[in-house]
Length: 290
Image 1 (cartoon, one colour):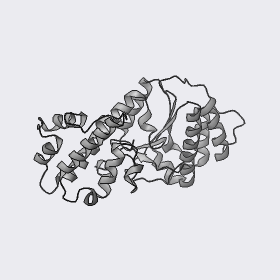
Image 2: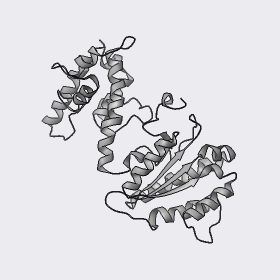
Image 3: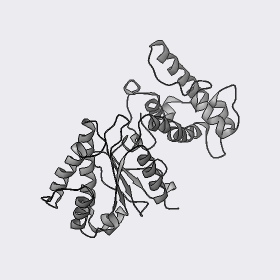
Image 4: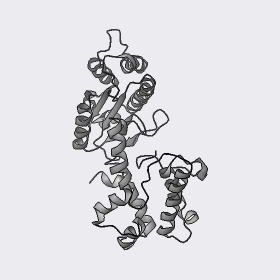
């Protein structure tokens, strides 16, 4: 299911949508085509029809946008009360000047997906929020990173903390990784050797692998300093981690990387053909740097 952390969705035919959120992303892309009159009530009716179709065809998917459904309940906690006419009327009544009900719906939808849908997925499988889009997640505020690490440790993950801000050269990084992950004495201190040895740790190493999905977490703090000193190596390290995390996942093991940057605007090229995304609390540029 797409989340607000995902890259901007591409236009597709409605028959290719995988769930209601995928469908809503398509409406967000071209609201004038789907809602030519700009009526939020038309969207509400459309989603009720969507839910009816699921029932007719015995497809199990949560009815979040049904009258009194999870989305309406969530709005009730924000607005203080709900209308018997449904969530469209609630949003219209609370749309601020300068916006439209449709624009406000999608703004609220982002908050709902972040707070409710993400929480449901996280409860079902600890750590999944850091594996949905990629296996590398960016953090700016160290407080948020600490909270994330504590949650993962409470779920049974083994956490390895590395002070990337102390790495002035690529060799500094190799020495720190080798020591933290107990690489063998023959470790070659180059990126190919890092790929090989990290693969051994991720796929076959000595960390617990239990049904709840616990595994290994690499936490890099002050990574922007290493990225400034060794930009090519900093990019490749993240790419290696994602590649080995995918291999580990095939073996039902977990490898996650949390990367803290003091630069709130830092960007990396895609790793493992996937973008390096900010965590859900800082995904928007407006939520960083202030």
